[in-house]
Image (cartoon, rainbow, N blue to C red; front, side, top):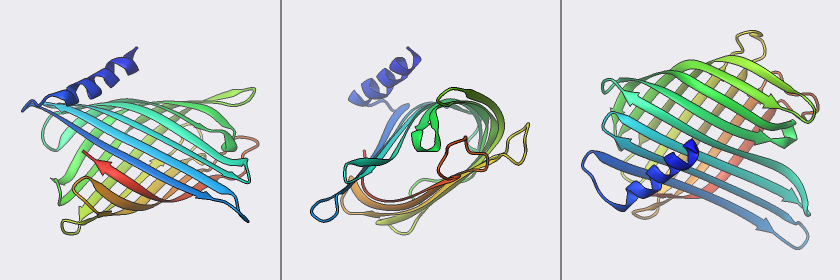
Length: 236
């Protein structure tokens, strides 16, 4: 019910303007299909929506990736996250969030994560440079085929987006998750991307993303996932 309520806010509020309310959407889609001697298909979707009203912000993030070779599935990942942020000042604030993920080829059928912590902006000038840091706590539950694991993490996250003129921008984010009860069992995620504007709404994005789990579940093919993508992005 909470998900439906927040989705309603995000979608419904886009139908009218309010000086104290802003809505931002960023939709990303990438598709590669080959036939003939090589039959490979890869589909990648991402969605980020933000509803800001005064000091309060509501964020929705979703992602989906599927790849197959000659009709045989090789990769399948998805995630859905909801987040609430409250700004005390232009620089300081706090957040709470819920995240649901799945990566069946790392033997994780579902991962449920609850985040809480603080946020600080080092620099915040839109269309020029935005750099912030988040620090807090994450409780995570991973469901496997016949078992599950509860984990407690510290969460350290930083993101910087730099604009190089009006037609090009770059973004870098890093997320470090040390396990509180087993410090060696950490997770490290990160991404670097470059976007080039091709119209008032659309841009072309090239990105590399790394997701590393130092304590992968039994049966996982690898401790890391590396993803290269080229996608069309629409911002409105």
